[in-house]
Amino acid sequence: MTVESTAARTPRRSAGSKAGTTGTKRTTRTTAKKDAGTEPQLVQLLTPEGKRVKNAEYDKYVAGITPDELRGLYRDMVLTRRFDAEATSLQRQGELGLWASLLGQEAAQIGSGRATREDDYVFPTYREHGVAWCRGVDPSNLLGMFRGVNNGGWDPNSNNFQLYTIVIGSQTLHATGYAMGIAKDGADSAVIAYFGDGASSQGDVAESFTFSAVYNAPVVFFCQNNQWAISEPTEKQSRVPIYQRAQGFGFPGVRVDGNDVLGVLAVTRWALERARSGEGPTLVEAFTYRMGAHTTSDDPTRYRGDEERQAWEAKDPILRLRRYLEASNHADEGFFEELETESEALGKRVREAVRAMPDPDHFAIFENAYADGHALVDEERAQFAAYQASFADEGGN
Image (cartoon, rainbow, N blue to C red; front, side):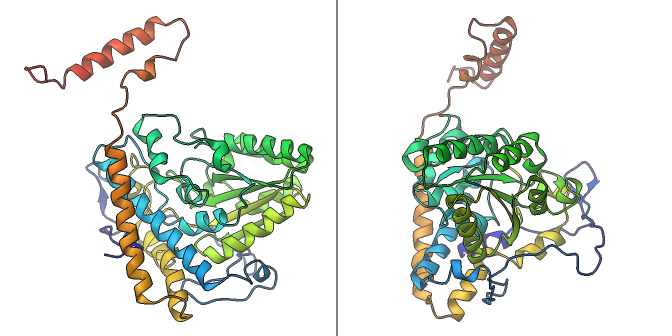
């Protein structure tokens, strides 16, 4: 089994089949018809078939890329997908409380992550595992929070990668404030803030757009539009493509094929250069797709049909780059075999690291709600203690 085929291994059911035992039928989204010539512009340097296409505006940002660097991008995506698959399995086995998979979004994250410089600062949400990989965060460190044993397993200032943010959209304000600060300091660096299409409906995001535009902050807003905000499709959140929202705030926006790692790399490099040179913020919309569930507590079969996923599987970011590498003679079978071995070793390492972590303190959640205690919290703690005790056998083990 090759890592790149992970997305295609999930058994499919027909679009008219019933989900679960509720009898609720899944529905396929319908989009409003657009007039000819009104389709949003999409930056694409690598087609789903692995064909390199020219782009007069963005080619220069990847013109010097070497075969070794291309293989590096491929390796990043494969290892990130393998780590993500292992984390999903660990959650299903009870080792993690929750996991937010990035399956299908590898190109958006690796392309943008590799576009950053060491002195740039990254503000993620909770799904940027590929960006974390690019910033040098050990994959096992990401899992402590999802296991409940820490509030973040790394020092943000050691690699300029902020801790994961669960509150939707708030990190865009943090990023804007940080960018305003480094601009006042005269730094030659930039900030990039990640968020999803669902977060684009949050007031925090609109406020960050306003402040960044007015203060010309050196920040790139990177929206991974994976088509679904849990069960809400993008067209029910915006009457215009997300990247076009930037126009109303006075800065440029661009939509890039989020499954094209070269296109994402080029566009993000352009946006970061704008920020560093004092030209202010940019909104990048990476048009991609969440192949799996929103998180492991979600059942996507209840709100989307298989035919939509099948259409996006044909645009798989890893397979796309592999086709290009093979057609260009930039990688041979030995490279892919070695990488498969490396990916399995990574999965094993992550699995062992998680299982070596301590069990979370089941009662820690009650400790810091109120400084002086609270009767309701005490009652809830007692109820939870009784629930935990119900799992013990008669022998007390």
